[in-house]
Image (cartoon, rainbow, N blue to C red; front, top):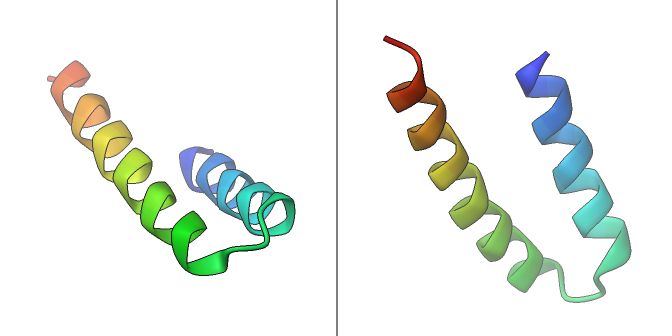
Amino acid sequence: MVKIILVGIIVALVYSQPDLRLTVADWLKVASDFLIESVQVKP
């Protein structure tokens, strides 16, 4: 479920922004922060 959401987010970013490199860099930051928060929330 989470993987599908993350894939949807990156696909949306790739198609919405012309600068792919910047999009990937920003997405990696968001994804890493999201994963860290997810790990902290779950015991």
